[in-house]
Length: 232
Figure 1 (tube, rainbow, N blue to C red):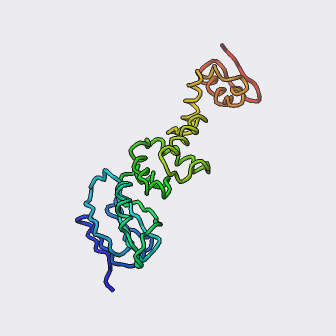
Figure 2 (cartoon, rainbow, N blue to C red):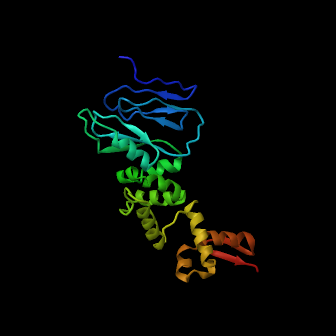
Figure 3 (tube, rainbow, N blue to C red):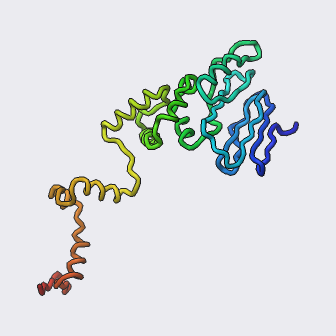
């Protein structure tokens, strides 16, 4: 059997699957930043030129019913119109889909991983791409990474905004830098070292480093054997 995929990397990517059932999760990469995933029969060829900019995300609606075709869409209305015409081999309208990310920018792809099935069917996902700030997506990803159960598959923009507000009220934020950078900024925000309580200073003050500085910068001499000469 000949391969169902025709790939021309020097011109871009044109794929034309003819398979009746889903192909595995293996994907074909175009210059490292564009993906195409062949899945079901009746798929219309998609050509992605190298360097093309995707302004609107493209999502694939993949039926769990393997006798039906899958299609791509760019809005809730687009999904609604195409899904009503999508029939299986017995003439029934397909109702259940998996939603795969096909193309779009990094922000759109990251939001795709945070949204539930209802969001794609209703078009709320596309609203979220326009309304939710990339920094807020980063915060949600980070909270999900540490196991915060409030960050799950969102169905609406309102759910996302409510969750973000709750996180902000608790002081959750993203800081870019090292832990030392964060500690320095935290102390600076408090007004400097003078604003720290004595116990905190005692616990974290580097006495050994301070002693070395004293020896190098003033008339203090370590004679050894536990004897210090002070000349100033």
